[in-house]
Amino acid sequence: EVQLLESGGTLEQPGGSLRLSCAASGFTFSHYAMSWVRQVPGKGLEWVSVISGSGGSTFYADSVKGRFTISRDNSDNTLYLQMNRLRAEDTAIYYCAKSPYFGGNPRLFDHWGQGTLVTVSS
Amino acid sequence: DIVMTQTPLSLSVAPGQPASISCKSSQSLLHSDGKTCLYWYLQKPGQSPQLLIFEVSNRFSGVSDRFTGSGSGTDFTLKISRLEAEDVGVYYCMQGLQLPYTFGQGTKLEIK
Image: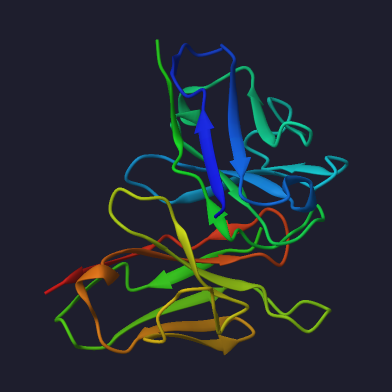
C-alpha cells in the first residue's frame, strides 16, 4: 500500500524558512516523480513543484520559483521542500503527491499524503 | 498557463439521482502522444484529494463504475450515475498537459 506522510509544517514568521518532509513507503520510490501541491484551507488546489524520479529534473510554479527548492533522497525514500523567504500567501496545507511516471513532467498524481499545515504570520 | 473552468461550483443532488460536472480548458489538452491529459479528483471532507479518472475516461483503481468521464479537446464532463452519501465532497478537474499543472476551481457536491 502506498503511504505518504508529510511533516515539518508549523507557524513561521514572514521571511523565515521551513523544510517539509514526505516519507514514502509501499512502492519503489526512485521509480516515480513526486510533487508538492498546496491548498489554502477551504480553497482550491495549487501545484507547487515536481521532481523526477532521479532528482535530475525539477520545476516550480512561478509563485515559489527562486524561494522554494524541491529535492529527494532515494536512499531514504524521502521527499523534501525547502521553503525560504516565506510570505503570508504561502500559508496552506502542503501535500506531497506521487506520480505514476518517472520523468519531470509526469502529468498527474495518483496518490496523495494527508498534508502538513504551514502558517506564515507574525 | 492553461485555465481550467468548472461549472457549476456547487451542486445539491438527491440520493440515487445523477450528477454532472463540466470542465473546460483554455486550450486543447491533447498531447502529441495521443493521450488527453485531463484528470478528475475528489476531495472528501477532511481528506486529501484522491484520483478518480485519468486521461478523460479511465477509472482509477477501486473507483466505482458509477463515475464516468467523457469529452475531448477542451470540453470535459464527469457524471455520477446514482449519487451515494460517500460521493459528497469537492470535485476538481486538472490538466497535466503542460507545467504548471492547473486545477479547476472545484465543484462542491452535497446530498439534498
